[in-house]
Length: 408
Length: 214
Image 1 (tube, each protein chain N blue to C red):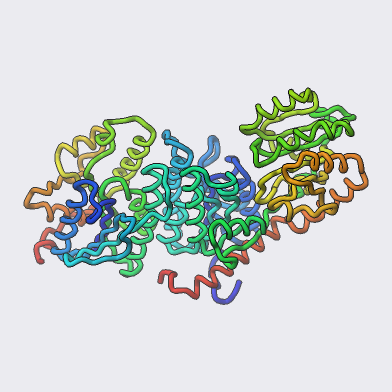
Image 2 (cartoon, one colour):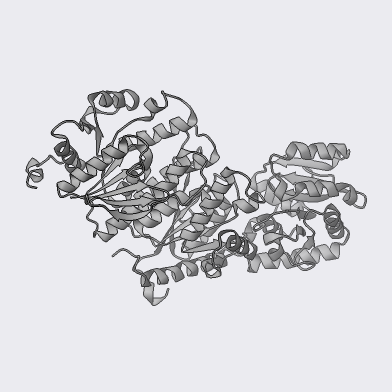
């Protein structure tokens, strides 16, 4: 640590997130689970304040990180955003008591997405502790524009959080560009630190042939899709590509995840008379999903909007050949013909071409999957990402120490 | 003594009679040599202003627009109230005695400031949601009630203007009698009773002579 901010104790960070395992809604839970574990190994005292979850203790230590679960407000509320505002009242109250119990001696408040903006912003000012935020995705990106007051309100909350943050973290250059464009944030206020992946969870031995039987016949290739069944994830593009792929390869399509499009997708498949070629698993437990990656012959990420693309990273770590849309964060993770096959977003013919190429050329498939694995191992290693994060915190503390905002 | 008053209406923003009441309260407190800061909402006239009556007012605007209902609006505005209250706290070398919160709108800010900086608050009740909504069970109304409930349970003292309201608090919120002070704005002892409630913020008995010197 630099001389200006030498502490006589561990660097202490309070992270705010609306999800942390076992409460897992989107990607933030896994992100925090891995990041906090590695930050602790680097000597950062990490406190996570998150929403409660049935069966999960109110307070526990997870891989060295202290987790506090607050009452997430269970009285009926008018809608999701109003619920979130009410949840933030409790989150702020409990976090205020936590920080106060350290005599205010917390170095950084780290917020994850707009869902904890209210709590984080008030705490920043009340304690005068530097606030940083990771913006994992934006409302304007998720909705492809702002169409209602509800969406505009969330957008403005993100904007407020971004501007009040000492610095914003984005997980890809694509997201950094989008945050700077959407909120008019100068470049020096945004830092790119990627998401990571834990390759060790894909190294356990199991009976592959036996597990594979759950999803496909031995002679069928497995084409895997993992993600929420919503428009922006592009699962409908993969379904449209099914006839072309099946005209050249004997394959089974395994779709993991759930969402509003499930029924319409199954109708689309039925209309093509291909119901026997698809398995829709719904949500799958983590252990089965890890095994499924390993027995799949190709993993397809056909997203139309993808701030980062954690699914691509998981496929890379599991040594599953990857076909991905040339869009958003995926463009940065995948190098065409080196760590995967890039296809045109929204183009079913292009997806069919990419999938067929990987399935019909084992030498090529092996080349891209091994390169991808090396990249996952060396670039997207959580230990490295935690080190970057710690250095990022230390840089901010140096700046904070020089300023006059710090309470005396 | 230094006091912050939280109110969502204060002249020139007048939506009900609360604005007039708080204005009179603040002016009387100034006369008693209390250092009074009013933190209030105004979308167009923002920032600090001290009038001829000696009241220091900070007017804050919401950083988020539009909103979908009064709750999302007030709950994000609370962060600005916290920012201003903290600025007062740090600029006065932490010498801030009590916050007087008028109705539910800034309850979350008062609760956070209590937990974070150990500044106690008194909760002054002008009206309550069960009356305003005719005891509606709709989600928006019950959410506002939950903010009132939070405010009542964390307050050092609760101030009501009539014996009737004291009974209504007991009826709807099961509030205990010994934390509620009835201070009628029409009674001659009004100001002294307010100061007495501020003084009892930590539960200590009142030394009345403190208030008769000025």
